[in-house]
Length: 615
Image 1 (tube, rainbow, N blue to C red):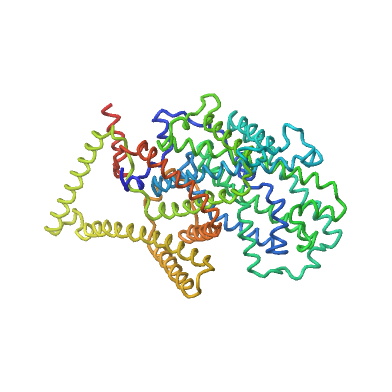
Image 2 (spheres, one colour):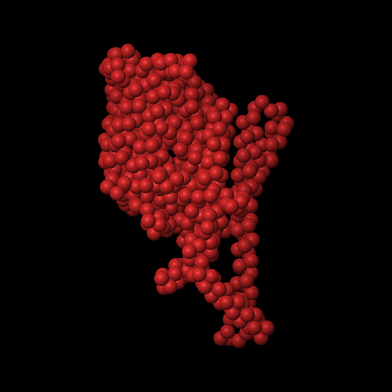
């Protein structure tokens, strides 16, 4: 119950929830639905604005390369998600993976941060829909009175309420309660319509570009007007346009064939988004010089400059569709994370209840909708939007760390309920006697020198040497992973602290870089753990380029986290502090792992068989 409780880890197999009497989520999703969830959650209205802002202030015509670099950086996290999602196909996404690989304390903080991310994210998206909807009515003042924004005097301060945003949240919440198949079908239709709008922008824009000679490129002062640094700064900005593909992993328990479909769903969703982003940026920057782009309405204004004024309504429709699809993607994962945390005992069992008819966590979904609708109605959450990125980047970072742990030091013990104590003691005693007998026999053969039909003494020595070497390898691997994490923190923090004097800053960068490279070198040299072949559900996707790929992911995501700003971290720290109190006063004492007994993985199957025989 002390500090050790923060590092207790749960089992991989999601089937254990069936044995504990929980209802199961519906197995209804396949690759097309997963792509719809991923693309719909990722492509928001931001792309309709981001193109102009980043091209004008950072990248210029090189915006396309900025999107490509950001897409590659997001793909690093996607590779890690793909392997863990196929190995551990249960609800909970990054919370679930970190609970299995890292420990309960880190898992709780990740889950708590994701709750904040999806609540604020959904509210911010909903608040962004009503101004776009108002354009179809002729402006904000032309909306029906029951949907229009109003200014109220509450507690001595003026509050702008948004009924349209709250209504949209409740509509999406009701849709999600009908069932995962129904909600993903609607999201797929909305996403397909949004993609059609983007294809119109690409095709019609290309036609105009070829007709006019791509004036945007011809008058630009080179492809890199802001230099390579400007292009990289643009990549850091547009990276957040790729956030959302992780929603696919949160539905892992509802996928028919998770080992095959989840990696394909994540990969194809991210590839689709990257391709669309790059093609739109190529066209828009080619139609209008980057320095003349309207930062607020770059796409519609680009068409208007060429006389296609009616395109504004089509582009606005695309923005509304993108926001609606993103709203669904924001509200879909949170009930499943709440359900996963409640299953593990860290939250009250109310959140883990699954409706027998619809096979979705209806109670958690309704509560999520009420919270998001309340925030969307009363608060202008645009100032809190940066907090959304914290949860996502923390999740990306810990998923990459989990991949390193899985490959080099996977859990070699599993938690079993204390009700199996009799079987555990019996099997453990049997294994102990067997090992002692084998050891005594080996020692006897060593003393006698062995014969031709007995164990080779050299082979016996090699077996014991391998056991000792394996223990040393695990310790060295764990130390190297810790060295990488600490090195990344020092390197990114010192590189971002531009207000520090040069000498201590560069010294800290050197120390952090050496720690990072040292850890990378050791992990590249030593062997990965053989247990990785049987960890979780095998036969799925395997993340390539270990350990380089996850370490690069950790480095990029940590750098972005550090640079989110002090105000954002101040707000997030308050939320995380509240989470610490909730964990210590409820989660820690109600955890499903509080009374378990950890046994070696090799003993687990024998213990289960023994307990069934006794029963």
